[in-house]
Length: 278
Image 1 (cartoon, rainbow, N blue to C red):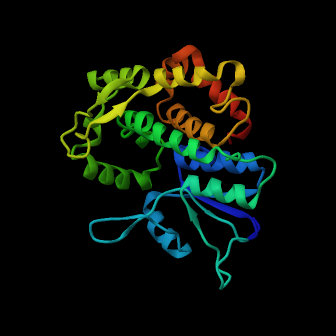
Image 2: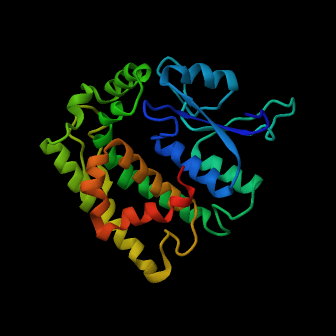
Image 3: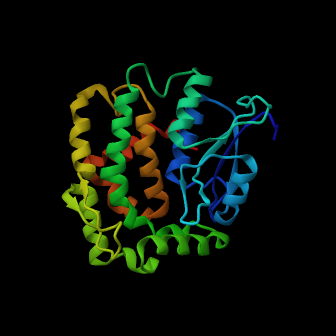
């Protein structure tokens, strides 16, 4: 691959090389494909992440208790985006990547059409609070099925440190907690308290979930199929990236249940965005 090509760093999988499961990385790839920009992907195992991000000079927003950086994926490096000394400036966070792509590669369309950025930011916040936080318990353990052996220990130790229990206890498939979480994900609940003994998970989270999101999207009438009507925007990639992650990490639950919710609206959303999913 040419060194002049954009590089996207993302988390590797034990599946085929193109099996990107990380929702944040999927958002970035959707954005790049929408822009018809050539790029290559460097797949990283979790143990490689810190050293690689330090080497390329990636930014970070949070630190661990000992002060070391917490790096997140994806990270984009465009050789044409450089500092005064000619060193490429890595861009972390899928939202910032999308903003950069709109500014640098305005064709063939905009991810943030004029006047929509604030609205799309509100949509991102809505999806994070009401969908992502609800999905979380369903995915924590099944992620192990798509991670390579090199990343298993890292994932287990990092997540068990957050939740305070073994991964198998968080939301076992087929358990009452699993079923209750699916119900909350589909129909919503006034408040969602994840019943894991940990101060983070005990925080009440307002949850409206998919059925109420579907009600909001119905306001578009026949103007769909996208979040803001007939034209795709970054808001669609925010949502579809979550759908893609569920389809890859819990495929049976997706195929047998989730894709059929709300008159198959969520599967139709995936199909509508299929031209940009790779």
